[in-house]
Length: 117
Image (spheres, rainbow, N blue to C red):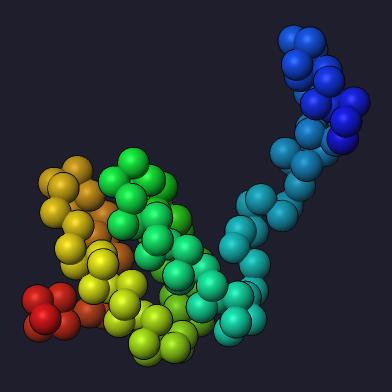
């Protein structure tokens, strides 16, 4: 890995490690099956990113992809974690994110009443 970093610093092309990883199925199959403890940590990380205006777009993208790929596991997560996450999500008011937020809410089958709390 040190050789790879040195090559990048010198303006060289990424080494074979980078290319091989870039083509691996691990990236296409993200996120993998997550144990409940990891899922709780992922939810907390997304929540933390949502609170930071500079990282909010990344948080919403990550949450959307997680809903898309792991909806059932996410719905079965610790209710307190989900409540906290959705309380923060409900506080996002930028118009640029409203389509994504509505998509997330619809796919998580959240009713308007749940969103207004």
